[in-house]
Image (cartoon, rainbow, N blue to C red; front, top):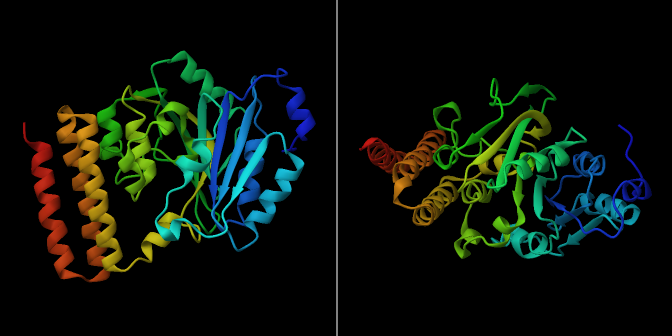
Length: 320
């Protein structure tokens, strides 16, 4: 697909109108993928202006140089922030303070540097759907998975029509149909009202898996699902969260799951007691994930810890 010039993009928008959508992207050492990602933004055809905000976390592989080239060619559309030292390794989450806080749009579309959009009307279709469903603060859509070997597969959303998932379903990650956190909604499919990301609770910065909490916090009135496949999700790419997670030792995994559970308890206070069973169910899923990893790592003490807690949470999720 031909990538339009900046002049061509600007000429298609009303003059002197601020961005209605902010595209927010985070990158780190994704030199092999970031071009597809950025060009997926630039092909978008929208009735109103959009802006592209990219945060690069001190990449060392040439990712930042690619971003700078696009920044020079699209200076009125693409704005980038480059860290001199990697913030993630310091435990710092900078998206809220660097790109979300600067976003001018009423809506924010999220994408990470190793994924990309494959539909040039993605932004317009998603925004139109959210305007039509004005009470909805978050929407997402279907996607295609691409594994490291280059094989593609359908997402887990097969045979679904347009649907509004209620908050209980989002907390539970879609229920039994979708197993584990992060399997119902992929980041590259999310569009959310900017107020959601600018008004997150303070404890959000301590979350080890931020996407899940964005999904839940943004779905207080439900989450709108569109069945069109409009993005491509790469699985287990080198340097990705899932790739790094698999390499963690047992202590690091234990720290991750314990912090996740602390944040789940804080989330429970936010969503209210009527969702206690939903929270317990998802805590059970997290502990089962810890159980699986303890088996993989051969840690008996961790296995017993996760088995006890998973059982406890399962019972709580089933109690009337």
